Image (cartoon, rainbow, N blue to C red; front, side, top):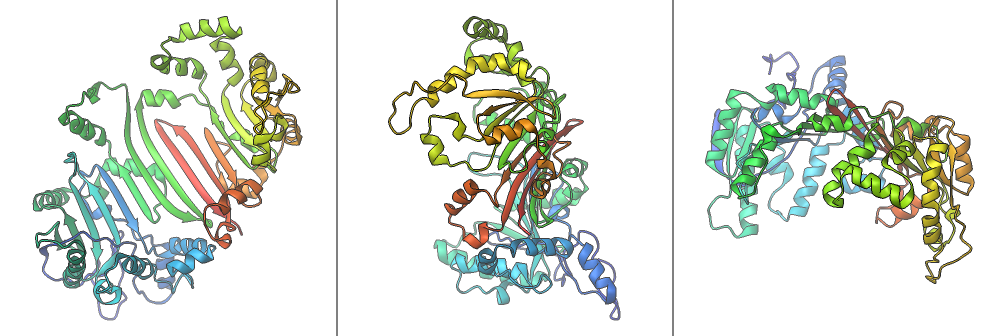
Length: 543
């Protein structure tokens, strides 16, 4: 923190939590772990107040936990600036939820931490613990959990860091929480955890050894200083309310644990594929909840995603009234690779499976690959009445389109094999279980798409719309849910607002109607580049 003067406002350094009233530099007490958490807001003067508050994200707890952490989760319950405005403006679209959490009101006035922690205290049964008296005087805005290894059958080396604004008050508040825990568990006086307060943070672990080791490792360097952490988190994008990280070292740590349990574990150094780390951010943006993750891949995992086409762009050419859809780009050798991977389950090599298919259906793996081409997807049109469809003996009751990369000519031989099977099963009425001989063998047909590839459709209006091409990509609901569909290797979209089927399903969840009516859509996408898979999930709301 910068040096302060009586006639100047107080500012935070980047990633700092809040002004700390320093007691002794480090004190250790025994107690029960406690969490709180999120970016700090400090009073500053004049126009600088608004600018600082708006642009500050408050950082996360990675700078307070050791650099050798294998797993890290950081939480921010009261973000400052733009993130707080986005969070509250989004959550307040769900009036029942916002009221129950005490989050209704102006973003500049709502104390998110007080509302959420107070609610947790109410539900904890700690009637003698008060947020105002026992927590508010010291509880900061950020917390983090670090798993450093030490895996056993029933424990691990875990340390929790909770930001504090007053180190002396933190000891007193922690004692109050410990008293509540003892009363509820009927403890025998032996502490279930140890804690230490130092440098503006409350650290908690299960044993003194684990806590000492963690703090010694922290002295050598924080997680925020780690190159692995920075490289892994970068594809996850901007920080928000929650961060999560899995380090490249997690595989060997788990392998060591499994070996200690007597399980045979392949040598990680000889593995042909590896997940080299995962980074994740959860944030609010554009009246949406957004989850973005980056996965660092190596070996066969890179090969599995290399060469995939941009499957998401096929969705943009669907009819604008599409209720749900997904599409995934495929590599050129997808079918052969899949057949090889399944050989242990099928008992057949790829060549043997090809021979069996040729003998039984007159089609080989190359024919299947030709039909699939470079993409696979499925689209659902509007107006699906699930109960009526399940009772129907006609494929027309299903407004579906199977999206393929091959041309209609490539797909037709495969459809000639599938249609009698589909016709047979649709010929059974769900109610009577009697086969209807009126069901034709052309329940499905294939059409070329204007944007390329083809679609297997049923004989209804939605199938005709798919064949004609559409502009789903121009639909604001779709664009908000899947903003990068054109460049994504895979994408998924589910319309919630205005969908009869989604409305029926949401009504069964028990959510207040005023809350689920605020949901607009769910969208997701995944992209691959230079050994990194990046995924984005968005839950959007209505205007």
